[in-house]
Figure 1: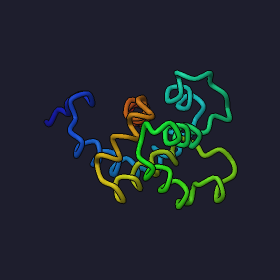
Figure 2 (figure 1 turned 45 degrees about the vertical axis):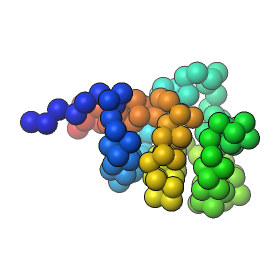
Figure 3 (figure 1 turned 90 degrees about the horizontal axis):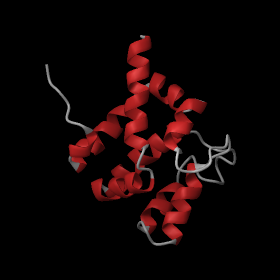
Figure 4 (figure 1 turned 90 degrees about the vertical axis):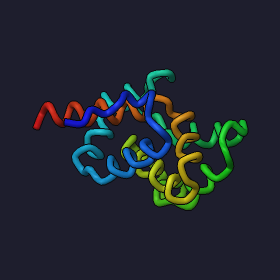
Length: 134
């Protein structure tokens, strides 16, 4: 039986593979949009039901903490402000990470994780909850 190292020790390629794999799990995507999951993902900010992860991407880009490519991927995607005016759930953040990885590689994916440090932990927690309920 293989034991997966704690995400702290993952390589960039392993993060990329994980998000690619996680995006294909429909039950995971549904669970990621729960209020409980939002609270775990956005714990640093005052949690509100209308927490919009796109605002964090925009702020990080404006402050030049991340590359402009992250905002470009967002603006060209199905979950941009124009295409999805309502607040997208955390499941769309998972899809966004995959799109970033496909267009810009692992370095850009690591920038997304720098903006959302709880993303991996929240996704793993969701997978664990689903596994225990199955």
